[in-house]
Image 1: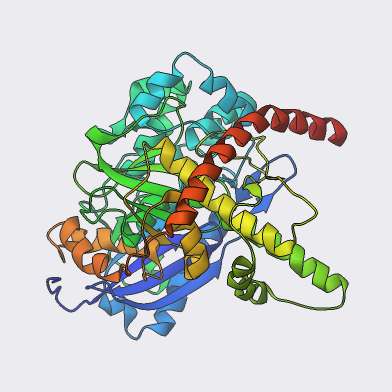
Image 2 (image 1 turned 60 degrees about the vertical axis):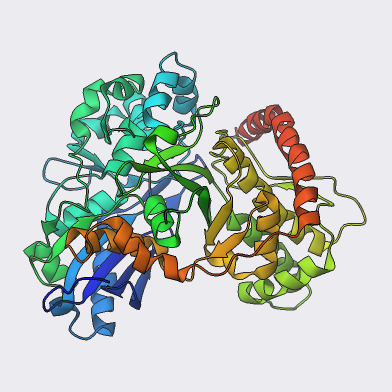
Length: 525
């Protein structure tokens, strides 16, 4: 049980995601009390840029906290600690006076593709991967800084620090420039000691930019007080301990059950992107030959997550449902996204498994897991006149399951149990497809805001409400895992056969993606 902390009974978790910035109030035993959310805003261009305003992000975060205060009586006086996590990767540059240098480059930004190709083909890349456990892709700050150095050096000349989203919010909350062990080590360091690694920085060609990397702090051990300006902006009490959480992938996995002491359990977040994770000790990390994926430390001694991330997961489902909406609209009928989602289980029941193959690479940024290719694009294989709209929907969902299988295979094998979270996890039929795709029982976490909860758990340990993270997990996480849903054996056997075709097809398609990208570029000019 949580120890009592005098006069305060709430921890606030902030999760600054790509779509929404949320502020969530939890009691000290992990019960979610209230949530306030502000839609996030970012801009994209045809050239692959995806950028976000730093001042607007802080303003939105502060408003989310003020809105939370309107929902929770006496929030300021009751708050024991505040913890912040946020969207990973990306580059948030600040100058010497902590003012933004320019809009942030987000993880969605694809402009560094040529730089990624160059660095990935260098002789130093394998050693970089052996240290970080993380493959290069256009999302990462290291790749983006290297690309800025080559193309926009004036930005780096103005910069005093290269932060991530949560780091920028922490700076505004506390006045302290810092980053956490997770993003520091998977981008610029070594997952074994959670520190920066000079060989990695050299491999990225960023020795001259070494001074931009902020100090590393572990928020489960170190806090800083909420500053007076931040207190005025948020309505909270100056001096309240603030915790810098790990990156949102790690926090969501922690809150959803990736690490509960059960051997060979894994966790997948099925949201706009697909994030597939397994918790292992540093000694048990499987480093694949292709140099892909992430190794991200957790706020627990010597425990890391191996991660493979699909650039797009439910974005594929959103796309196919929009097609249906558009056809209905053309015939004078309206259907909301929610109306379409309600039909998904019915469409799955009307169709047979595995009659059509779909590769879910629908993102304009291509794919980053379990392979990295900015030119990768989605496709159907095996389409015939017998297929209808329901078959397309089933194929897209099966594509998500097969992409998940592809990711876990690149981490060394299928899990013995899979915990899932994200909006798509609500569908029983979709859960069965996922269970069959990885041939493992599936359990759903009932934790609504897993990312904010993971950050709040770090705060709970930091303020000594729990003696260690394992004790916090036993109360905040394990009781919220639902019953195991086993896969149907015949479907599991069918999807195992289908996966071999799926993998071979995507390998054969790779040269075609590059030719299509060149053709698109030619037509644009």
